[in-house]
Image (cartoon, rainbow, N blue to C red):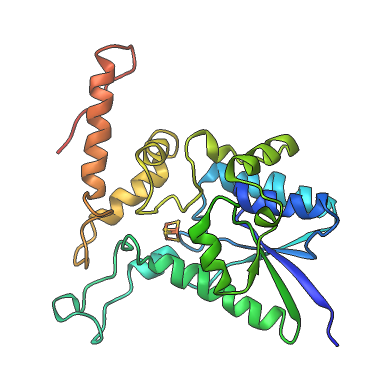
Length: 262
Ligand code: SF4
């Protein structure tokens, strides 16, 4: 009979990292970690840069030093290759021939094409014929996600040991494994995520202008199926809001004014 392999699915956010730490603490560590890195294009990661640095410079080496290997999975498709995909005959008539453009809130093609499918392919090839226990970092106070975990037969050590999301952050902090992303966000998602909150976008605008400019360039592409980056705004509108914020802020500080453009 095949040996059972315990695999932790980890994004290196607080919950999934604490899930691995809990396994180590209770003598039931995973045999391996699997992490899916969504890519913006073939060179640029979809992770917020601070989080990507944390993953590769801190988290993966930490677990490797404790004998737990991390498998990094990347799909063939990237955000950009999906963005420029053309809508075919199966799409709504008024959209046929247009490019997909921005992912839709709640129906994200990045989640499907750059994450779920590559992970599924990896599972089928790397662990073919093996019995796998899937460890998912879902906290004891996340009832909806715990219910959805039943659908794919996952096991959460956080749930087993009654650890909440707050507990998970404390565990990571204590171990020196809390991603810097939590200084400006309460979640870790792609930097081009339509579900991102104001603070995350503001962080990108202030600290990663090259990535922000990439979004502005995409907004100018013609023939998009949707102009809206999220449910309500284009990137140009969000950009204008930030410039307005800066202009107001400059009334009360010495911060230089960025010229306001329409
Ligand atoms: S973080 Fe946002 S953009 Fe990335 S896969 Fe999830 S929903 Fe899609």
